[in-house]
Amino acid sequence: MSQRSVIYVRVSSAEQVEGYSLDVQERDCRAWSERNGVEVDRVFREEGESAKNADRTEFQKMYAYISKNRATLTYVVVDRLDRFSRNVGDSAIYRAKLVQWGQKLRSVKEQIDETPAGNLQVNVIQAVAQFDNDMRRIHTGNGMKEALEAGRWTFPPPIGYRPGHKGKLTHDPERAPLIAGLYEKVADGHSLSDAVEWAKLHGLVGRRGGVLTDSTASKVLRNPLYKGWVDAPDFGVSRQADFAPIVSAELWARVQRVLNGNSESLTVPHTKVNEAYPLRGVIVCGTCGKLATASSSRGKAGNKFPYYHCVHGRGHLRIPVRRAEAQFVTVLEKLVPNESRMRVVEECFRDAWSIKNASADADIERLNGQLRSLKQRKTGLLAKMETLTDDDFRAMYVAVNSEIERAELALAEAQMESTGWEPSAPELEQGLGRMPSQRVKVKLDVDTALGYLRHLLWNSGIYYSQSDLAGKRRIALRIFTNGIKCSKDGFGTPVTNSLFNMLGDESVDAERLVALPGIEPGF
Image (cartoon, rainbow, N blue to C red; front, side, top):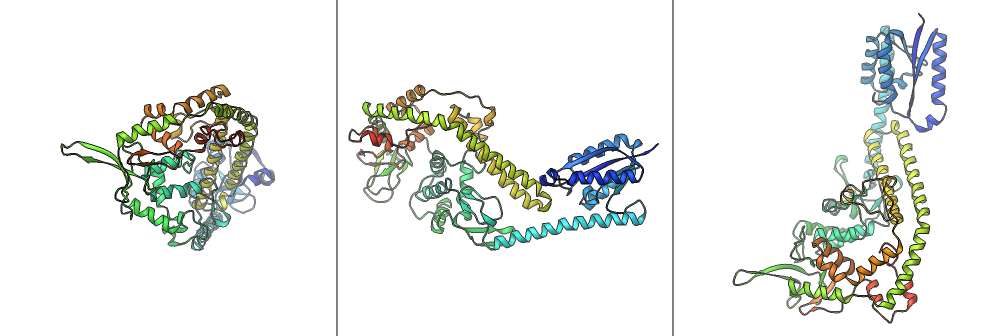
């Protein structure tokens, strides 16, 4: 009976897969088999997997095949031993299995056999391959430390930053201002929950595209990288960063004092919003312009009387919560558009709706292209896996996955705008859940959207009164993005967002309404 072999060929990069390396290895292995009178039984081609360990798809398939067919096989042929393994321990284990099954490992480029000298040769070759890997890991680790000591950042960037050249981070133009705003809100006395609600309303999401939580925001507010300070205790590095901070060192320090409970201001932040004070974080003292707080006073009979009040001076704001709530609803009820103004808005809305629908497909195509490009980058990173340390590869892999998730989120948002799809609560908690291709498309017509807009604009007071705490705060913060001034006599003429002001102002001409931001579909 003639001797038979299995051939194992492997490359570790996508570029090699697309080139000729696998074919050349197979050709040389077949030539060796022919010269030695061995019939090739089967070829296993490992496309783009590292030999750092034995957990490789085709490698494991080959061993399962040999186990079942060992009675008819004699040789395992590889082009070089480092194609078989680059790990001394794994190599010894899997070579022992071959010996147990009566198989012989042969290398086209190296002279090895089952003699003591041949075994020594194998061990030396495998040790050199592992030494090469280990030295790469050390050099990469040293390189990371050198970069950190130069004030660069060698790990995945936090929210608000983008990867830069050689670890020199750059600002994310969309998220960096929101991170700065989050710091400012907390420093000015807003509770953490209020600051997070503000940030979410303005579009800030978690690093992986999920909903921003108080826990994530707390980590952001504690991270010295945002003040431009590199802190990497595992590498023994703590120094000024070589890239622009998102917040000043002074603002960062103020926020730490607030979070530690020893703020220089008299305002004490609360991590939870009390059900009794829905307008805390919205009402501003009409005397000093500072954010008001809220608390209860106890009467002689032991009854509690809740107040919104200012702690920044005598004679400043102090108003009962019940009276403030009633007057606030009255303010909302007065915020109704002028009918003629509204008709102009509807015309603008229809035009904007038409333009948005016409460009939706182009946006989705562009985002799909961006996503494809990122996935190609990921493939390229996988191709370089063998040349990187495990830690370095993991950091880069997490970073590119994060960019892919952000691109998928942007694509999901484009799908939502195009189809009217809205995520459910569980999907929001899981970062939008289903992929766009899995979502059911429900096209909203412009008349339905306009009907909802009219209903909302004319009934904001009713919506507020009937909402729960979260709903009340969302309505208040959307309408009064900079807060609403209040005195002991109540609210004066409130400053709202430009939409309500211009819709109720007869002096505003139609041209300014046409150019008014915020009335496009999606308002």
